[in-house]
Image (cartoon, each protein chain N blue to C red):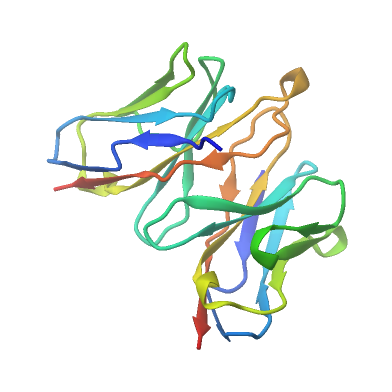
Length: 117
Length: 114
């Protein structure tokens, strides 16, 4: 079965540079979530999108932005990178249920490991 | 508001012995609860989920978890550990209302000794 695809798998950037992470959800999934997992930490929710609209916002820095496109893929844009942004960034996707309530499970991609030097 | 507490940061068992990973949660809503596993340098794989259909949930690889509302617990068990079970395990809660960001527990690292 097709899974969530994330690219690139690894990314190395310098401080103050920008980075773009891409996420391709499972086919027919309409909701995308982004999580950040720092070294030795549990994943923290950043932001989510449903049908190209932002649905929830977590602890996402103002330097980061994200969007979901008409084909449901999503991109996380990170600017003015800092050393503390080094982390594993996960994307997850799910299928929205009826009445705007998501009743399904989030399936995670393999993650993008971002290293800021 | 919701939160998840995994009571042990590390658990070590011998191969072939039972596994118990403990998780307590709090949620303002009737939550969905999940266990995910993360092998080193890998993504998160869903082990099982609870969504109120049955209190005892069976997952993949012989794992199961029991939802106990009175104890606000969702402990993960397996009768017999295998070396390949060594990984990080996350107990996760979703509020199951409009808005579904997951809240992760701190994780439990399971070590399996030969």
